[in-house]
Amino acid sequence: MKLPSHRNFLRRKLGEEMLLSLVVLAALALVPLFVSSPYWLGVLIVSMYFAMLSVGWNLLAGYAGQFSLAPAAFAMLGGYTTGLLAWHWSVPLAIGLPMSIVVPGLIGLVLGRIVLRLSGPYLALTTLSFAEIARLVVYNSIDFTRGDQGLNVPALVDSRVANYYLFLVALAAATLLVYAMLRAPIGRFLMAIRDDEVGAASRGVNVVRAKTIAFFVSCGICGFAGGLYGTFAQLVSPELGLIAQTGIVIAMVVIGGIGTLVGPLIGAVLVYVASEMLRDVGNVQMIVFALLVIVFARFFREGLWGLARNAFARRAPAASAPPSPAGQA
Amino acid sequence: MSALLEVDSVTKRFGGLRAVDGASLHVDEGELLGLIGPNGSGKTTLLNLLSGHMRADAGHVRLDGREVLGLDPARLTRLGVLRMFQLTRVFARVSAFDNLVVCGLALGLDERRASMRAIELLEELQLAHVMHLDAGQLSGGQKKLLEFGMCFMVPPRLALLDEPFAAVHPVMKETMAAFIRRRNTGGQTFVLVSHDMPVVVELCPRAVCMNAGKVLAEGPTQQVLRDPSVIEAYLGEHAADEVDHA
Image (cartoon, rainbow over all chains, first blue to last red; front, side):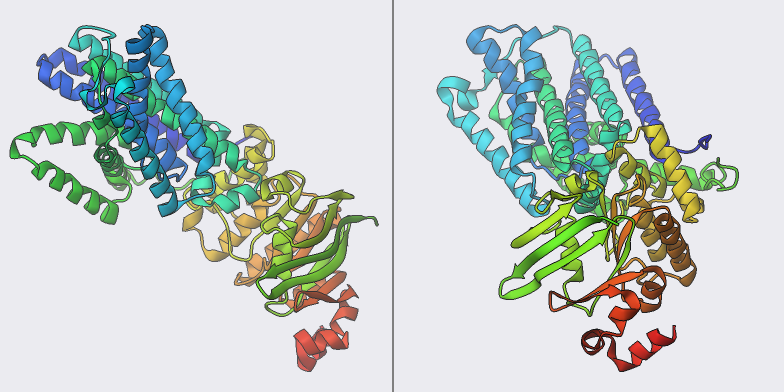
């Protein structure tokens, strides 16, 4: 039996989103050719840090339906993993940075098993509690972590442009990893769990395994973002794990488009760059983003990417017309 | 025929209520068994126990002679016990096609085989024209058909169908009934829970009637429907006359 060319709607949709993600990443790659200001390159580096957190959190919340409130806490754990290894035991970054994936990933795996049967507000509250406990442990373990003084982390590369491309490569790798996962059976299983966990189990999906993998990968991505951020800022502090940081990540994903590949990239860069532009007007920036989140959550649930896609579909109705069942085989 | 499924003195309590009260029945290999009874008689609870969605307080359930009571739904599904729910369960934000593919992948098919099987089922269930739509966009009847198809991505050992015909358009109902007939002729085993007596009479050679969590009567369907206790508890004199004339 010959399969119809349009047979795999999910893969086609993911392919389109990945292509657009590559366009966004390529555009980011060109920025240093036109922007030489270290300040704005720094802003974009931090926006790519948030984009990595958004990509990681979106895998868990947007594709697997697991609304965790701990992405910033895992970034902090990643940052401290690299920092503590270097500070106490002079472990080189070549080992310290991969460990910023492994350690938060394993902690996320354990957290994932603990919250396995929780959903909605219970899951959110449990992960929020974990995030606050982790932050307070780091904050108060002064002898080990230096508490709120923060911990110095060695730099991986010196120049701002080199850091910029380092973050860009890491962001591209995280996006490709999530894309590869979503194309594989595990991706479909996660979406099934998101839509109906009981239904997914009833169709034979190993819910425990799928959720555990999602927690490991998501927390590993967030941890690596934190580890990389530490080498850029050459400092990690408990502030990395503040719940407000998680709030920013959620805002970025919701505004960009939750449950899409490209949404978190667009959302993170736009929100962070715009927040820097609004910095001079003080805390108004947070009010603006809070209002934007409300507007998007209420009226445009697919975010900016959804708006753009719908506008494109309206302008090119023939291209988006449903396939005819005739002659599919 | 040998018994594929044996249910032995299964009990499920909710506080002081015995929703299933020592129920025993068997389902033979290749059989199409009707499970009938008034609302609240314990049919759906029994299916929940058989499909692993609830844990029984007592009793045994054997599939091919192997104790399966207490296994989780995913494990039972992989052993071949597939369940269709009374309230439709589909994956709303993925396409109808991908809903089917997920089920195939979960049961060990590779992507290509799952895709081909999905297309075969979509065509057989007359859903090919909506395969690209998210399941959440389908009509109620189409969702029922889709969920029905999701149970057959890999031929199950036993299909537990809970009210598959409820609130379904007559044309779709006939599509589903014809599908069941064909599969049963090919040796597929079903348990069909339905209040649609004419369909139960037409499809099911044997029936079990439950009431208040207990098995009230079992045997050839016409005989069960003429059983005085079934008429009193479930059908009423008028309905029994109608079935007689069906």
